[in-house]
Length: 121
Image: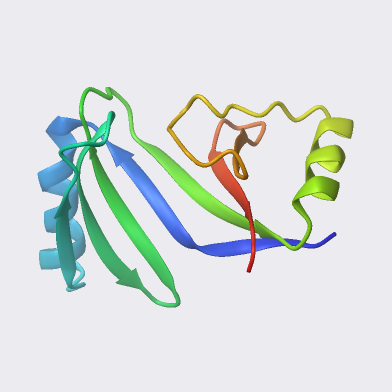
């Protein structure tokens, strides 16, 4: 089993911080952003997609979040073994955080940072 960092990082932003944060990344730092409306998503109103080096940074305008969180992507080459390994280490799957396919899981590190773990293709 091998786990590695994925290319996606999402910053979940409250409605009051979304525009200010988007301005920081585009106007202050000079990154290009593509905004994507998410009208059918239960928690994300819209997202800005930013190429951040080799990674994709997603600024997610949340419907009603009152805090900012960074969410990261992890990739595994063997989901079954990874699931067992994580459970052995007391990691609890929090798959109700956001809707995802059954083949993926949400987990948190001890500091509360959120990770989606999925099998690499």
